[in-house]
Image (tube, rainbow, N blue to C red):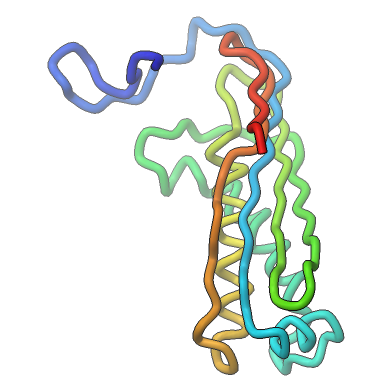
Length: 158
């Protein structure tokens, strides 16, 4: 396991200095899933919820969340993002899979931004549907892939 870089030799927290690193094109993909009652999923897919288009609101919330990552994760660098894409895959009878891809040309990666995107998108789905389905579950938030930087290319073995 690599050394934990967010602590100095005395154990004090620090934001890693990336000033000497070379900027490279970096991409990260993350995913999450939301499990719900089949009736809830049906209402989402046919857009019958009074609050509006659940997936489009969740997509916008996830994109907005990526831009706030550096403010919410204490040692995460605030960075300008080049692109964010959020996709949904319906798995009947009861699951929505959320996947985000985040890209940047920078000195640090965007893994946290991708995981923030899927987390907030999933939470938004929950929020918009909770009145009719309090038993929903948000599951399996994980990094699927990252590229760029000196640590190389990571792809999760499924």
